[in-house]
Length: 459
Image (spheres, rainbow, N blue to C red):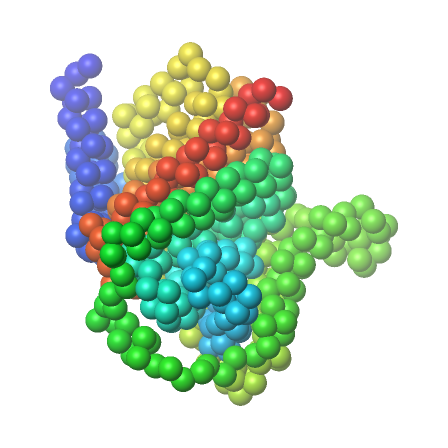
């Protein structure tokens, strides 16, 4: 190994450490990604103009290539989320769960409410904002430490509904579908198993921690941003929970419709052609389903029906920062994959004397850890490494689902943009809340992935 190689490898390591350290200090993730990319560029001798204009910005894995491809999905999800939030439909669903289960089960209610909303296609950031006010009231009533509420938000909004459950219109599921030509329901059995492990073990962990906290005298402490919420006893004017569910049911139903009726109609008929179109558009069809759900919500709920353009406009604006933050991290990955060190790493994993499924797991996990993003790591893997693993004999549907599940493990390290945003919203520090977040979003999903790997290897 030459001195140049050592310098390049060191640069990759320093860049990754810098990205994590800056994110943990609350530095904007876009700046952190650009700064870390410059470290990689300089230490690995990449041409500056090409690296910034092509590798980072507009190349195959460029930030704006990703943003352009996925803008419609992010925008549609944010519009739907804003409409469900402003209409109080999301709150109505959470209140119905609370009435059924009781405030004592505030953590379970938070997980189920956020899980239902994210499975319906609402982006994580919007779901956290929508559920947070009611969740704070519930944990105040049950006297549960706020750090565990943060863990419940992370479990419901950032694990099983994003990477495991088949059919979800999440960006992760769509990335695999677009790159592999599979449906959103690919590898459904593995997804259901992994989703059940994440949900049930995650709930068990949170409940165990709740009991331990109560025994230790740990209680709810309101943060500076919570005073208006916990001090407000006015009842929100919410729609009936059954009515509130209709837009979510419509979105999920429309996404499932093409698969359920695939081949049921003559290809020449209008319905047949419509189903063929839907099945051939894994990115566009979920976006259209989310738009249809938004339209239905605007028709059903008077509080947003009176100002539809403002609600949709606010929702579109909500999508910009999550999209750009994700794109910036992917741009960092786009620079990393152009280095000789990454090429050697990729080839080394492929050449290791281990089963292809295990090698694939390590590849996806490492990329997600480097980028701090499940969608970023998965996009890089699908674009640069997936074909190699298909050539090694991994069935395409198995690769779709297990790679997607694997992307949602080591992505949630401290520099993950979603983790940083959630801690900011909840007013907690990494020191206060990250341990519980790490267990439910890193440890348990990794265990679920390994269980699926073992079963896939035995089949």
